[in-house]
Amino acid sequence: MEIERVGTGVPGLDTFMGGGIPKGIDVVVHGDPGSGKTSFAIQFAKNGLENGESCIFVELDILPGELRKKMHMLGLDAEKYEEDGRLIIVDGVSGKRVGTCSRERYVIKDPRDLNSIAKTISDARQYLGEGGRIIIDSWASIALNFTSEYRGLIRFTEAFVVESRNSNYTTLLITDFSVEDRLMKILRHIASGYIEFLTRFEGNSKRRYILIHNLRFTSHVETPIPYTINSKGLRVIESRL
Ligand SMILES: Nc1ncnc2c1ncn2[C@@H]1O[C@H](COP(=O)(O)OP(=O)(O)O)[C@@H](O)[C@H]1O
Ligand SMILES: [Mg+2]
Image (cartoon, rainbow, N blue to C red; front, top):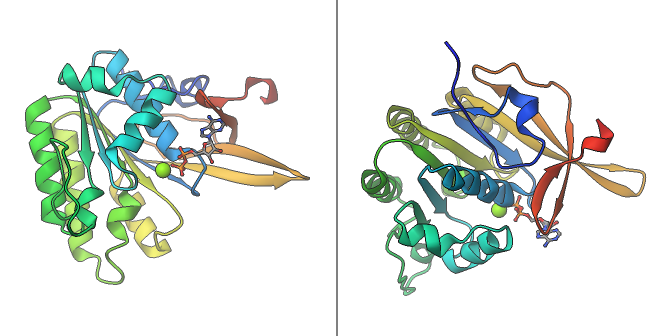
Protein backbone atom coordinates (compact mmCIF):
# COMPACT_ATOMS: atom_id res chain seq x y z
CA MET A 1 0.00 0.00 0.00
CA GLU A 2 1.32 3.43 -0.92
CA ILE A 3 1.91 5.77 2.02
CA GLU A 4 0.18 9.12 1.71
CA ARG A 5 2.62 11.96 2.39
CA VAL A 6 2.41 15.66 3.13
CA GLY A 7 4.89 18.31 2.02
CA THR A 8 7.13 20.05 4.54
CA GLY A 9 6.91 23.40 2.76
CA VAL A 10 10.71 23.65 2.67
CA PRO A 11 11.91 23.87 -0.94
CA GLY A 12 14.13 20.92 -1.78
CA LEU A 13 13.58 18.94 1.41
CA ASP A 14 10.78 16.49 0.57
CA THR A 15 12.85 14.52 -1.94
CA PHE A 16 15.19 13.50 0.89
CA MET A 17 12.34 11.76 2.68
CA GLY A 18 10.49 9.85 0.02
CA GLY A 19 8.31 12.79 -0.98
CA GLY A 20 7.31 14.15 2.41
CA ILE A 21 6.18 13.28 5.93
CA PRO A 22 3.76 10.33 6.12
CA LYS A 23 0.31 11.75 6.74
CA GLY A 24 -0.95 11.41 10.30
CA ILE A 25 2.36 10.72 12.03
CA ASP A 26 4.07 12.77 14.73
CA VAL A 27 7.57 14.15 14.33
CA VAL A 28 9.90 15.73 16.87
CA VAL A 29 11.80 18.70 15.46
CA HIS A 30 14.83 19.52 17.58
CA GLY A 31 17.25 22.42 17.23
CA ASP A 32 19.01 25.29 18.94
CA PRO A 33 17.27 28.63 19.33
CA GLY A 34 17.56 30.50 16.05
CA SER A 35 17.97 27.33 13.99
CA GLY A 36 14.64 28.00 12.27
CA LYS A 37 12.18 25.72 14.05
CA THR A 38 9.35 28.25 14.17
CA SER A 39 10.00 29.24 10.55
CA PHE A 40 9.91 25.55 9.59
CA ALA A 41 6.64 25.15 11.48
CA ILE A 42 5.14 28.12 9.62
CA GLN A 43 6.27 26.76 6.24
CA PHE A 44 4.78 23.38 7.20
CA ALA A 45 1.47 25.06 8.17
CA LYS A 46 1.44 27.13 4.97
CA ASN A 47 1.99 24.03 2.84
CA GLY A 48 -0.96 22.32 4.52
CA LEU A 49 -3.28 25.31 4.23
CA GLU A 50 -2.41 25.77 0.56
CA ASN A 51 -3.26 22.12 -0.01
CA GLY A 52 -6.69 22.46 1.54
CA GLU A 53 -5.82 21.08 4.97
CA SER A 54 -6.70 22.64 8.33
CA CYS A 55 -4.06 23.63 10.84
CA ILE A 56 -3.76 24.13 14.58
CA PHE A 57 -0.74 26.17 15.65
CA VAL A 58 -0.20 25.92 19.40
CA GLU A 59 2.20 28.73 20.24
CA LEU A 60 3.80 28.77 23.69
CA ASP A 61 6.87 30.94 23.05
CA ILE A 62 5.71 34.13 21.35
CA LEU A 63 2.46 36.11 21.45
CA PRO A 64 -0.12 35.41 18.72
CA GLY A 65 0.38 38.88 17.23
CA GLU A 66 4.09 38.22 16.85
CA LEU A 67 3.42 34.80 15.31
CA ARG A 68 1.00 36.31 12.77
CA LYS A 69 3.68 38.84 11.86
CA LYS A 70 6.22 36.02 11.33
CA MET A 71 3.64 34.17 9.25
CA HIS A 72 3.09 37.21 7.04
CA MET A 73 6.83 37.62 6.56
CA LEU A 74 6.93 34.06 5.27
CA GLY A 75 4.00 34.63 2.93
CA LEU A 76 1.24 33.11 5.03
CA ASP A 77 -1.84 35.33 5.36
CA ALA A 78 -2.86 34.10 8.82
CA GLU A 79 -6.00 36.22 9.20
CA LYS A 80 -7.39 35.03 5.89
CA TYR A 81 -7.18 31.38 6.89
CA GLU A 82 -8.43 32.14 10.40
CA GLU A 83 -11.48 33.85 8.93
CA ASP A 84 -12.00 30.88 6.61
CA GLY A 85 -12.04 28.71 9.73
CA ARG A 86 -9.09 26.55 8.63
CA LEU A 87 -6.32 27.95 10.82
CA ILE A 88 -6.47 28.11 14.60
CA ILE A 89 -3.74 29.85 16.52
CA VAL A 90 -3.73 28.81 20.17
CA ASP A 91 -2.41 31.47 22.53
CA GLY A 92 -0.24 29.63 25.04
CA VAL A 93 1.61 32.69 26.25
CA SER A 94 -0.88 35.21 27.70
CA GLY A 95 -1.98 32.78 30.41
CA LYS A 96 1.57 32.56 31.75
CA ARG A 97 1.42 36.11 33.00
CA VAL A 98 -0.89 37.02 35.82
CA GLY A 99 -3.25 39.83 34.97
CA THR A 100 -2.69 39.60 31.21
CA CYS A 101 -5.83 39.35 29.15
CA SER A 102 -6.00 37.86 25.70
CA ARG A 103 -8.48 38.76 23.03
CA GLU A 104 -7.74 35.50 21.23
CA ARG A 105 -10.49 32.97 20.65
CA TYR A 106 -8.30 30.02 21.67
CA VAL A 107 -6.35 30.69 24.85
CA ILE A 108 -4.71 28.22 27.22
CA LYS A 109 -5.89 29.55 30.57
CA ASP A 110 -2.97 28.08 32.49
CA PRO A 111 -0.07 26.90 30.27
CA ARG A 112 1.53 25.22 33.29
CA ASP A 113 -1.46 22.94 33.64
CA LEU A 114 -1.51 19.99 31.24
CA ASN A 115 -5.29 19.59 31.48
CA SER A 116 -5.71 23.21 30.45
CA ILE A 117 -3.45 22.67 27.41
CA ALA A 118 -5.20 19.41 26.47
CA LYS A 119 -8.62 21.02 26.73
CA THR A 120 -7.82 23.96 24.44
CA ILE A 121 -6.25 21.66 21.84
CA SER A 122 -9.22 19.35 22.02
CA ASP A 123 -11.62 22.31 21.52
CA ALA A 124 -9.63 23.37 18.45
CA ARG A 125 -9.65 19.83 17.03
CA GLN A 126 -13.35 19.52 17.61
CA TYR A 127 -13.92 22.74 15.69
CA LEU A 128 -11.76 21.78 12.72
CA GLY A 129 -12.76 18.14 12.50
CA GLU A 130 -10.80 15.17 11.14
CA GLY A 131 -7.47 15.50 9.35
CA GLY A 132 -5.01 18.34 9.17
CA ARG A 133 -1.80 19.49 10.78
CA ILE A 134 -0.95 20.40 14.33
CA ILE A 135 2.16 22.10 15.65
CA ILE A 136 3.29 22.49 19.25
CA ASP A 137 5.76 25.36 19.30
CA SER A 138 7.24 24.42 21.54
CA TRP A 139 6.82 21.19 23.43
CA ALA A 140 10.04 22.22 25.22
CA SER A 141 8.15 25.13 26.79
CA ILE A 142 5.59 22.74 28.22
CA ALA A 143 8.35 20.47 29.52
CA LEU A 144 10.13 23.37 31.24
CA ASN A 145 7.57 23.22 34.03
CA PHE A 146 8.55 19.66 34.90
CA THR A 147 11.95 19.04 36.37
CA SER A 148 12.20 15.46 37.56
CA GLU A 149 8.72 14.00 37.81
CA TYR A 150 7.77 13.29 34.20
CA ARG A 151 4.92 10.85 34.57
CA GLY A 152 2.17 13.43 34.03
CA LEU A 153 3.99 15.01 31.11
CA ILE A 154 4.58 11.63 29.46
CA ARG A 155 0.96 10.62 29.93
CA PHE A 156 -0.19 13.95 28.46
CA THR A 157 2.15 13.56 25.47
CA GLU A 158 1.13 9.97 24.80
CA ALA A 159 -2.55 10.91 24.94
CA PHE A 160 -1.95 13.88 22.64
CA VAL A 161 -0.08 11.74 20.11
CA VAL A 162 -2.72 9.00 20.13
CA GLU A 163 -5.49 11.55 19.67
CA SER A 164 -3.61 13.19 16.81
CA ARG A 165 -3.08 9.85 15.06
CA ASN A 166 -6.70 8.85 15.56
CA SER A 167 -7.97 12.07 14.07
CA ASN A 168 -5.41 11.85 11.21
CA TYR A 169 -3.43 14.96 12.09
CA THR A 170 0.20 15.23 11.01
CA THR A 171 2.02 16.59 14.03
CA LEU A 172 5.19 18.54 14.79
CA LEU A 173 6.53 18.60 18.35
CA ILE A 174 9.23 21.23 18.60
CA THR A 175 12.03 20.88 21.15
CA ASP A 176 15.37 22.46 22.00
CA PHE A 177 18.40 21.97 24.26
CA SER A 178 16.39 22.95 27.35
CA VAL A 179 14.92 19.43 27.32
CA GLU A 180 16.94 17.05 29.46
CA ASP A 181 18.51 14.04 27.68
CA ARG A 182 16.47 11.46 29.53
CA LEU A 183 13.22 13.22 28.65
CA MET A 184 14.35 13.68 25.06
CA LYS A 185 14.88 9.92 24.78
CA ILE A 186 11.41 9.24 26.12
CA LEU A 187 9.88 11.72 23.67
CA ARG A 188 11.76 10.15 20.76
CA HIS A 189 10.43 6.78 21.86
CA ILE A 190 6.85 8.08 21.85
CA ALA A 191 7.07 9.90 18.50
CA SER A 192 7.21 8.40 15.00
CA GLY A 193 9.98 10.61 13.73
CA TYR A 194 12.91 12.70 14.81
CA ILE A 195 14.47 15.51 12.79
CA GLU A 196 17.32 17.65 14.05
CA PHE A 197 18.53 21.09 12.96
CA LEU A 198 22.29 21.33 13.43
CA THR A 199 24.54 24.35 13.37
CA ARG A 200 28.26 23.92 12.79
CA PHE A 201 31.12 26.33 12.38
CA GLU A 202 33.33 25.46 9.45
CA GLY A 203 36.22 27.86 9.48
CA ASN A 204 34.62 31.22 10.06
CA SER A 205 31.27 30.44 8.58
CA LYS A 206 28.20 29.05 10.19
CA ARG A 207 26.65 26.11 8.36
CA ARG A 208 23.20 24.74 8.95
CA TYR A 209 22.10 21.14 8.40
CA ILE A 210 18.92 19.14 8.70
CA LEU A 211 19.49 15.58 9.93
CA ILE A 212 16.68 13.05 9.63
CA HIS A 213 17.34 10.52 12.39
CA ASN A 214 14.22 8.48 11.83
CA LEU A 215 10.89 8.81 10.09
CA ARG A 216 8.34 6.02 10.12
CA PHE A 217 7.42 4.36 6.80
CA THR A 218 10.23 6.24 5.11
CA SER A 219 13.59 5.44 3.62
CA HIS A 220 15.35 8.73 4.10
CA VAL A 221 18.78 10.21 3.54
CA GLU A 222 21.17 9.45 6.41
CA THR A 223 23.55 12.36 5.88
CA PRO A 224 23.09 15.98 7.02
CA ILE A 225 21.20 18.09 4.47
CA PRO A 226 22.57 21.65 4.16
CA TYR A 227 20.03 24.48 4.36
CA THR A 228 19.88 28.25 4.69
CA ILE A 229 17.45 30.70 6.25
CA ASN A 230 16.57 34.02 4.69
CA SER A 231 13.53 36.27 4.56
CA LYS A 232 11.64 33.55 2.69
CA GLY A 233 12.37 30.94 5.35
CA LEU A 234 14.30 27.68 5.16
CA ARG A 235 15.56 26.28 1.90
CA VAL A 236 17.75 23.29 1.09
CA ILE A 237 20.97 24.27 -0.68
CA GLU A 238 21.05 22.16 -3.79
CA SER A 239 24.42 23.27 -5.06
CA ARG A 240 26.18 21.56 -2.15
CA LEU A 241 24.67 18.13 -2.69
N1 LIG B 1 14.19 38.05 7.29
C1 LIG B 1 15.17 37.23 7.62
N2 LIG B 1 16.31 37.22 6.94
C2 LIG B 1 17.29 36.41 7.27
N3 LIG B 1 17.26 35.54 8.30
C3 LIG B 1 16.14 35.49 9.01
C4 LIG B 1 15.04 36.32 8.72
N4 LIG B 1 14.07 36.05 9.60
C5 LIG B 1 14.57 35.10 10.41
N5 LIG B 1 15.81 34.77 10.06
C6 LIG B 1 16.67 33.76 10.70
O1 LIG B 1 15.84 32.83 11.31
C7 LIG B 1 16.24 32.63 12.67
C8 LIG B 1 15.05 32.57 13.59
O2 LIG B 1 14.25 31.56 13.16
P1 LIG B 1 13.16 30.90 14.09
O3 LIG B 1 12.35 30.13 13.15
O4 LIG B 1 12.50 31.89 14.96
O5 LIG B 1 14.10 29.96 14.97
P2 LIG B 1 13.77 29.09 16.26
O6 LIG B 1 12.29 28.94 16.33
O7 LIG B 1 14.51 27.82 16.01
O8 LIG B 1 14.33 29.84 17.40
C9 LIG B 1 17.05 33.83 13.05
O9 LIG B 1 18.08 33.42 13.91
C10 LIG B 1 17.58 34.34 11.75
O10 LIG B 1 18.85 33.79 11.56
MG1 LIG C 1 10.91 29.32 17.85
